[in-house]
Length: 388
Image 1 (cartoon, rainbow, N blue to C red):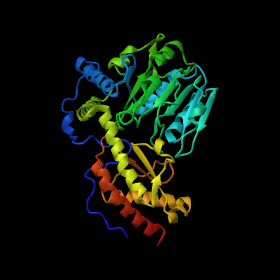
Image 2: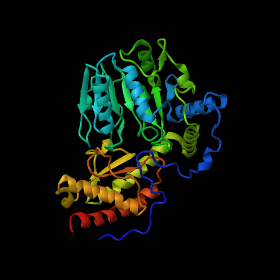
Image 3: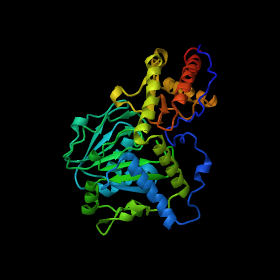
Image 4: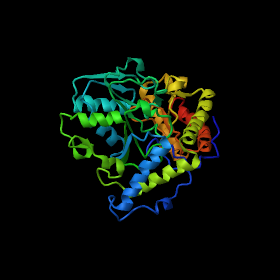
């Protein structure tokens, strides 16, 4: 029996969204929020424009790409892209976890496009990226938040593509290198790697995406909340701080605080390094631990943010699925009861296991402090589930 650890993580917040605030965050950082004023006032628009400008600078987004703040988190941003851009040509949909599968459902059952190819892969794997047809539009997630599987790079995206590459990058932005020349539409939310508050999403459009918006009129009605054009022209105000609906200026101030923190620690390279360092701690532990393994089958597709693990202990792995699920849920609950880790159970649609957020706002020391608790909790769970 593993001895119960005495040292807990200082911040046991390992949820995959909303994610942990940046180190040192306090409510006082919101004191300068533009409250009681219209978001369309001069100071309100200035705050929104500052989010856009700092985002462009930190992520090195090309100057001719449009960056907009949109409603409804990453989901709203992705839906805006799907409903506004698709239908001009066939589309390849890539799905290897629940969110990608959700976009497939929207395109096939809500938009009901005729020419759709779905390239699926089970949890832990990627579809055959070589099978993608770049004469078509392609919709994919960069990092599968619920599977811990990411695309290894952007080499598989054709430079001479005819269709648009539409990328849900919600748990990748600010933690992984995104090749902007290969991405026509990119979306994310503040609540992931930034550790910001929910409800708002970001959308980045390449010149090719803008050209599609201004040349293609979808055959279906578009709700106001999705409209990016008016009279066949891009609504430029969306990309200059004039959001489609009323944003939370508290959330905007919090986003500015996150962006300032990224700049303070050294920008995108430092943020990527922090996330990779956190993953490396878990990798070393998994290597020497016989009851657990990564859900992704290959190292090169392993996420450094939403790290997904499976229980491979022989006794539990040999049990039926109900027992496996019970063990995983019990493990996560026990850690929460001990204030050692919050919200690290696998996503509801994913195989039973654990999901540990390791984005840039997580301190490596907290990951190191968590691991002995995982070993202790597993010992407790195995005794209760298998050996009783």
